[in-house]
Image: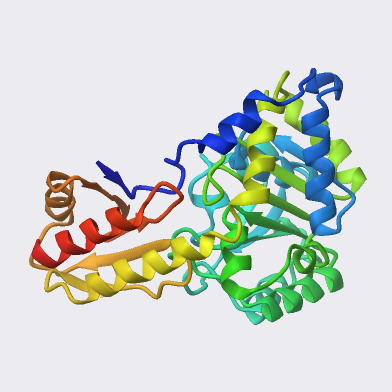
Length: 339
């Protein structure tokens, strides 16, 4: 079966497994796991930020950031398609007690002017929640792997600074954006207060995310991670996989992007496809024509040995990844051409 449901389905490579088995470990709850400590320092340095903390999941890293940057009753601004709002179980409300102000952006990305308008009056009116945080997602999941324009992020940073708002980046697939846009980790470290990075998606590690920020942010995040049940013991085995991914799997993301574009082109030629959204990275989102049922299309692809997923509202998704080979790509294209 060719699994294109997500880039989370990858298995560790032989080199990654070797790194994991050879890792030197300790008890990370007592901050004595040398491999975890090394990874955290490495990632913080990559972004030019003071500190980093290793988490079991991206959701926990995001929810921890929201918790440490807000107080119960505060307001968080994010796009209507944001992962922190749609796909984290209502955690922002449950864990941090914040309400979400959804901005009506395009493909998961809103304009700086929309944020300015939304903020207006929220600091002086006692009847509305206190504006405290802006959350950005890059790349955007529901937006089909779309990448933010960096200059717009700079403008949003200025708006946040002017209005005393914290700025968090859900960078679940940030390295896909960096490769596609030829940008650097240091650029992002300069404008965000906190950044979460998921290593079990495009980079192919089996488990793990990191939260990057100031020493004060990470010190508070350490306690929240404990409260959320995210403190681990000999987690150096997992950290070693992440470290290997950072050294070996970033540049190759361009291959995933190219293969996604090839799939997109084949879908555009298919009579059963109504439209294919622009493809910038490794996510392909498309709609089938109105006369057929999307579940029927999924079933026919499954019968051909290809797994994909529905995003709701008629949207279907395929995601290329580390374990998706050139031979598999040829089979997917041939199946689409003959479906």
